[in-house]
Amino acid sequence: MRIVLLQGKEQRERIFRDSHLDRLRQLGEVVVNGQRGVPSEELLRTLIDGADVAITSWGCGPLTARVLEKAPNLKLVLHAAGTVKPIATPELWERGIRVSNATEALGKGVAETALGYTIVSLKDMWRLAAQTRAGGWGPVSRVREVYGVTVGVVGAGRAGSHYIKLLRNFDVRIALYDPFVSEIRAKELGAEKVTFERLLAESDAISIHVPSLPETRHMFNAAAFARMKDDCVLINTARGSLIDETALAAELEKGRFFACLDVTDPEPPASDHPFRKLSNVVLTPHIAGAVNNGLERIAQFVIDDLSAYASGRPMAGEVWAEQMNQLA
Image (tube, rainbow, N blue to C red; front, side, top):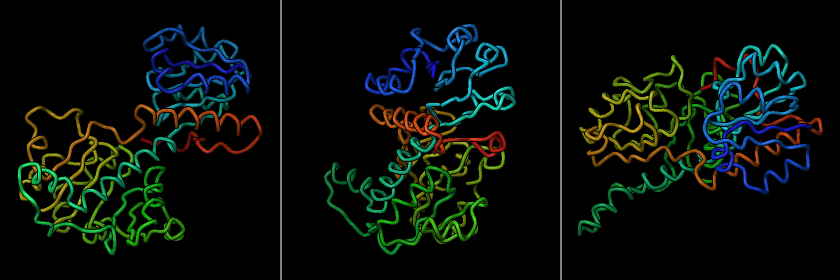
């Protein structure tokens, strides 16, 4: 196989180590983009010439008809990133080219981060650490164990389902809202399928794992916040657009619950945004996905999917054209 890595040099080096390239070379001839920056359409045409497999990532432009005409033998695109929307075109699907992405690899990091926020927030560590630093010592009346509580999970895609898997190590009730998941599938995951309204009203912690779509914009709004329990922990490692931030700031100012936000809309929030001043908000700079050494998990996932393809096995990250309207 002729395997071409289309992303710019600096992006490739962030994800693929020399050991990963060596593994790819065991599967075929490897061609890399030696230029920095976002490759132009002309550069993509040059690189992809004669390719059987193309590996894309963040910073790659769409695989247009002009690009694809240079690769009549192209059979597979492996996207070393999340959503394939930046690179997928109608022509890609029309040519019957198979597509895989690394959302599952990214989702594991997101789920692990969400679990960390869940444990630390229920333990009230954020506030207790700040109080202790200021000379205090307690009180610990708000501390809760990850035991006997209800954790609400909104969305059971790659990240949400892995978060549920991690939660099964604890004695908690897992409530799931996902209109695309059946009650049987929810039970298989280890969760109880509930309505959005029930999840809001019954959860001690809520973790959001849905894509940013027109239908999900501001699904967490003033009406949703009004249903939430006092001292609930709201965790967003998905997309900032899912939350009406004005409504959330107004609710947080009442001191009723706590929020952990790894994403905002826009990013970063303005320097004078209320989120930067409220004591019951933790802001992190979009670190829930793959960062630094975590990016290597993406490279490994891509290699595993290519190995599966080469041996005729199913690819864990394969996506299809009909899924595009449900993907982030």
